[in-house]
Amino acid sequence: TDRYCVIGNPIAHSKSPRIHAQYAAELGEDLQYEQCLAPVDGFAATVARLIGEGYKGANVTVPFKLEAARLATRLTPRAQAAGAVNTLVFDGGEIVGDNTDGVGLVADIVRNAGVSLDGKRVLLLGAGGAARGALLPLLDAGPRQIVIANRTLATAEALVAEFADHAARLAVSGFADVDGPFDVIINATSASLDAAVPPVPATVFGPDTLALDMMYGNKPTVFMDFAAGHGATVRDGLGMLVEQAAEAFALWRGKRPGTAHVLASMRQSQ
Ligand code: ATR
Figure 1 (cartoon, rainbow, N blue to C red):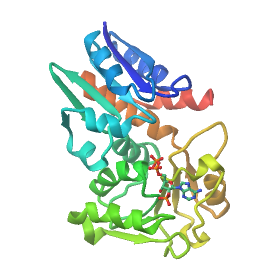
Figure 2 (figure 1 turned 90 degrees about the horizontal axis):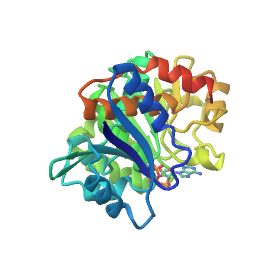
Figure 3 (figure 1 turned 120 degrees about the vertical axis):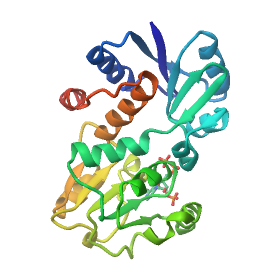
Figure 4 (figure 1 turned 135 degrees about the vertical axis):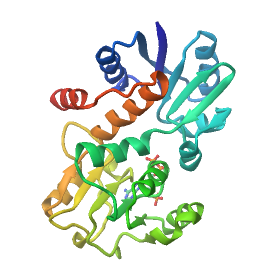
C-alpha cells in the first residue's frame, strides 16, 4: 500500500483525505492518504520523516506552500510560476514540487461550470499567493485579457511584471476603477475570511458573468451574495478543491479520477 498525506497546520478540517479515498476506491488504487500536522517550524523535518517512512508524495496546505517550493529539489514550470507548491512527489532522491491549484481552478470553470475561457475577459481579484498560483493556468486557457485588481496596487504591478511574456494580455487596476463587464470574475483575495468584499463597482457583473470565489463554506461567501445580487452566476471554491486533488492524484498514480461524484457528495455534506 502506497502512502500519501496532506501536510498543514491546522489540518484537522482538511477534506483531502476523504476526496483521495474516494478517488482511490473509484480507480481501484491501493493507497492510503492521511492528515499530517506539522509544527509551524517543522515542515522540512516532517517531509524528511515522511520520505524516511517510504511515503510516495504529499499535498501541502497553509502555511507551508512557499516553504515547500524552497524545499523541492525540482519544480514544475507551473510551480515555478506560482512560487508555491501544493503537491510533492518523492521520487528516489528527488523532491519534485508541483502546483495543481491553478489547473484545478481552470478545470472547474471549463468542465464543471461549462464556461470556456477562450477569448474571454477575466477579472482576477487579489495578487497574493492564490492569485499568483492561478495566473499561468488561466493565461494558458486563452483569455483575451486578464485584469488583476488588488487593494495594494504595487503588489498587482509586481505580479504582472513577473509575467512579462504575457504583458499584452495583462492589465492592473485598483478595485474602485475596474472597467467592466467581465465574462469571468475570480475572487482570489482572502477578504471573504473577514466577511469583506473587494469594493469593485457593480458594473463588473453582467447577466452572463460567472463569479467564482476560491473560498468555500456551508453558506455562500459575501462576495458570492454580492455577485448574485447583481445578476451573476456564482460558484464557490469547492470544485477547485476537488479538481486540484484530481490533478495531484493523476501526478502520483498516472490516472486522473472523475470528479463529478466526489463534488456532488461534498456538496451534500456541506
Ligand atoms: P493568499 O495565499 O490567500 O493569496 P496572501 O498571499 O496573503 O494570501 O494574499 C491575500 C490577498 O487578499 C491579497 O491580494 C490581499 O490584498 P493586499 O495585497 O492589498 O494585502 C487580499 N486581501 C486580504 N484581505 C482583504 C480585504 N479585506 N479586502 C480586499 N483584499 C484583501
